[in-house]
Length: 394
Image 1 (tube, helix red, strand yellow):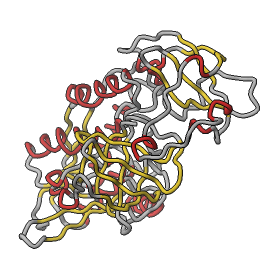
Image 2 (cartoon, helix red, strand yellow):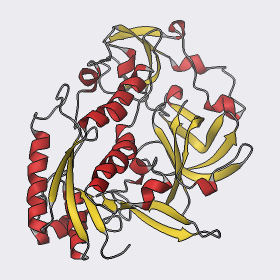
Image 3 (cartoon, one colour):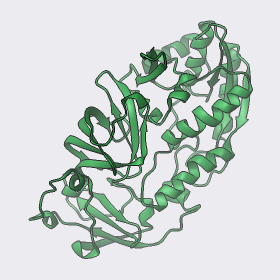
Image 4 (tube, rainbow, N blue to C red):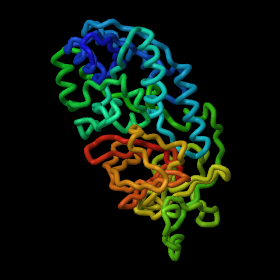
């Protein structure tokens, strides 16, 4: 990257992006800040209506302290179309989406990048804890790599698992090789107004929400039965033998268990969920093991070791499989051992990816808890490079 490159920092008002901006400025680059507003509606949110205004005020103070220009862009329309409407659509199908992953692919490194380019940016930088490097292949093409952040407690590469080579070409992650405590220390020593600001939580740019209330904007509540599946249900069931059988979840019926409660709509619940079910009278907590959207039923099992919570394999549809490194993409009939996680901050799991004509199958060395349709499975090489991802179908 040339020293005269013009860099747009996505300044959120948080400490991570603030330090990223400060580091770039200290390194002598031509830096400007761009704050984006992506959400107006406060329905279902658990914080005040002016949270984004507070963030913007802090971001402006940070930009002023660092000595860089500050700009503002409203991307709420495109955010609603590409992220929030996708969320509603996925929940309606009984899948649990990850809006943060979509926000990065569709907003920060797409719509936001377009706004940054219009202001003269050559690169866009964010405060993600991940690393990027590149190499030149035998044909002279530049291949970009994205690697886990150096801080194992804050690695955020998972959220960037849908980025493309084109998006990575103009992306910068200035704090990817330092730890969170170091970021806080730099912010304090630099006197940045965000130095002690708490990390944001909840849905990207929406914040913490009461999910059923938030979803009821478009998905109507509809009461239905909660069915408990006893452990005895699995007695005598044949063990799955093929990869396809191991990836296929059990499809429960009402008569497989007993009614133990009522829910407000099967689309509001997710696999592995414990809180919010309103079930008592059990020695151990009950967990959601399946939902039946057409019949508006949810199925639960008692205890974290309940057989319905655990499975060894999953499938990703061909059209929902994404390779950050297209040069390493598996072809039908091929297989490769990688390390995989199926949710943010899950320790990496040993697994083998099997490419078939009907999709990509991931077979884990050990059973996995709460494999959740709609979430992203992400695979890494042993050196920490993130190679690809896909939406879990089942």
